[in-house]
Length: 598
Image 1 (cartoon, rainbow, N blue to C red):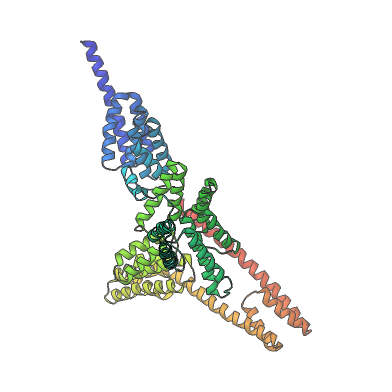
Image 2: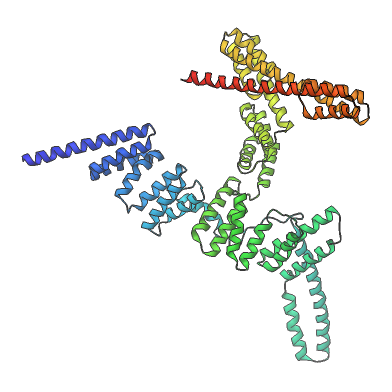
């Protein structure tokens, strides 16, 4: 009895110690200290594996239930050491890792689950989605791929130029075939009557059979007829040297290639595409079409390399991802096929099933024009996630301005300036937002609401560091007795004013240089000297020095030449001293900052 009691006491103490370690680990999780928490959980497991596992399982289930993925992962990685054959746990942990964007760890966990159970569907689809960095999980992945189930061929962009070119050709050839068939039937009908009149029954029966067969024939043109029609069009356009003629010639050749691929005729397709390549004509999807043609010719390896290279430059291209997925499917690589099709499905879901971003932009523009700003903004947002288009950013800015969401508008116009630093439109829009904030600041100032005034003046300054706005902001802070802000802004204002003065002086100096060059060209040396001397006195400039030296030497004005050299040497010496002084000032300032930190 005593032995049992002692044993029970030891178990209780062990449980208590294990609970303390788990509790400490959970506390560390609350503080986002996940690695340290894992150490405590590991210690608890090593102390009492069975009891610790049961307790950690409860905590793991709770973390998963509330989508605390980091906590679940920290606990679950201990549990997987115990339950090494639990493929469901490995899959769940993979999902947790993927929620944290830790795709490498997620991939390893999904592979672990598949190693245990090869036909574990959820882990397979999760692995493919993780490899493609697509945030879809378990059955969501499989559901998203249903749009590709009935697709047996590749997906092609629409024709360029005349988008209905094949329909137009087919209709024309169908009518031509119908007429030829009608003419042939008329001839046969006449021949049949003659044979019957002559009593040649056997020959008449043969004609009758052929006639009925022709009567039931379809007028739809063959693939060869359509290709021949394309070739005739191309031949007729060869001699048109106008820009419009050249464009139509290239478009027709490109369209013939696309049409040939849709009919699984790689030879005709390559005939067109190689011709375009030799003429150095670039169409967006030309390389993709070469890859598809190579696939039909059996060179799948080269085709895949072309697609992978294309995705390296444009990873969100829907045609590239979907067609590469379909290509891997044809090649029997189920995992990589699923990866790229999952990426394609995710991108298409974002763009409402549209493959071209230009189509998405067009629909967004239509929504903007019709006043559906929310929808337009959503579509524009998808476009700018994938490509830097200043026009799309501008449209987003327009919506934000209409909605008076000025902070969002500021970000869009700054994106435009990132792409095009000289964009006048973006600069003007930022100036407008600055002025809106400044006017509000002025209104609050007049009402003696200085705190609100300061808020809006600061917002204006976050948009543009306008010197007049800084002056007004200083006036507000003086009334608020905020001496630190007054000092900071006054120092900034002085620097701005100094910069503006220097810019004005530089502008005047450049005008003197231009004037000097014009006078020199006219051989008006007196005026040229006067203009260059003005410019030289304003700033040390080697080019201006050379102009003056050349003129003085040509005019044999030796005294002026000597004085010019002396002035040059003094100015260089002065500039060197100023540079040294500025370096000393910077070092002292850095030393003061370090002392203040210490």
